[in-house]
Image (cartoon, rainbow, N blue to C red; front, side, top):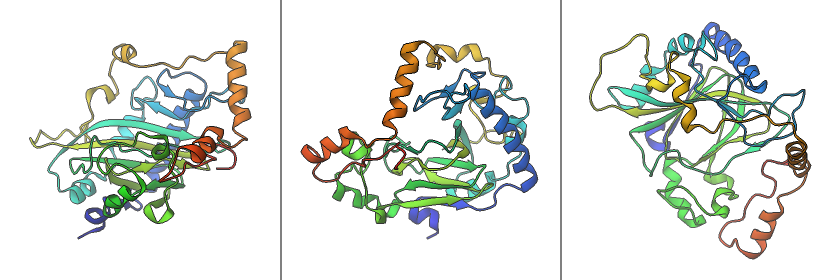
Length: 296
C-alpha cells in the first residue's frame, strides 16, 4: 500500500520545473495585484479589513484562467506535467477538472478556516483535489484517511461535513491531523472528502483544483490537458458568470469603513462567542479561541 492509498493524500515534490514556475509566479502576482485593486470582479474576500494602500484584502480569485484577467496564465498552466502522476496515484484512465481557483493571501493577517470536506461524502476515490504551490507554505491541516474513523471520538461525522460550531472551529488534538509544509513548485493531491482546514500565518499563493474521474475516455486535447470545464477556459464569456456570482463591491462610505475598522479591532481580541460556547455548550470538543486573530 502506497502513501496515497493509506493516507488519502500525497505531496509531489518539485513537480514544476524552475523556469516554468518562475513564469507562473510572475503572471500570478500580476493577477493578484489586479484583484487587490478591484480590477477583477470575481474575487473572494473572507475578512474585509480596512483597505491598506487602498487595496482590498483579497483571499482568492475565481475563474483565474480567463484571458480578461491574464493572457498568458492558461497556456502556462497547461504546460504543467503532473497529469501523469495524478493518473498514477489515482489509477484513473482520464479525468476532468471541475474547479480551479487561485488562493492568495498577504502575511499581515492570519487565517484559519473551518474544518470541512470538499467532497459530498467520505470516501471520494473519484474526486481528487490538487494544490499547486507557488510559494513556501506551512499550515494546511488534513486528517489522513487512516484516521478518519477516529473522528467519532471527537463528535465529528465520519462521512459528511461538520455543521456544529464546535466541529467547524474544533480544536482537534495534533495527533489527529498532519500539517503540510510545501515548497514552491510542489503539488499536493488529496481525496476531496478528507477532513481538512486552511491555516496560514504567512503569505500564501497557490492554485486549488478539483479533478473528477471520467469513466468514458475522451479524445486528448493538447490545448486542454486538464479537461477544464468550459467556464474555466480562457475565452469563456464573462457575461455568463455574473448571474450566479456575488460580485464584491468596493465601498468607501462611512458605514462600510466603520465595519472594516471594527473587524480590525476584533482581530486583536479573542473570540468571545467561542469562549461562551466552550463554557456553556461544548462538551466533547472545544473551539479554538484565537482563530483569525493576531494571536492565532
